[in-house]
View: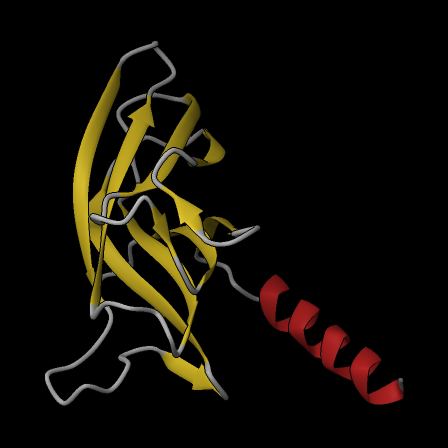
Length: 155
């Protein structure tokens, strides 16, 4: 019990030190898998249109995930009522057949950048909706899907 509480405290402490994070949230995929009809949505309130931002998809999947990649549709609803849609491909496995993410047992975590140094055009509430775009009506062994937005840092 003490070890679990210590680990939880350490994780919270590390998360609070993440100065560049604008937004991050992960949603568990319930049931038999991720249905093509199930959008996973994230509401983000933005008050800075001057800074650049990097966008990432967070993904947790099991070792039995059936593909080496994942195609996603991402719909963005802007504060002014307009919307846009992108198609993303996340490469999850190297040419050597090994999962590219960090693994713990038979579960793998990926954080894959899909936009770099992008500025928000408007202040207000954005909604980002992710849908799986694979050729399976229900995509098995996807555990969690998330979105991370962080301030762009010049290298």
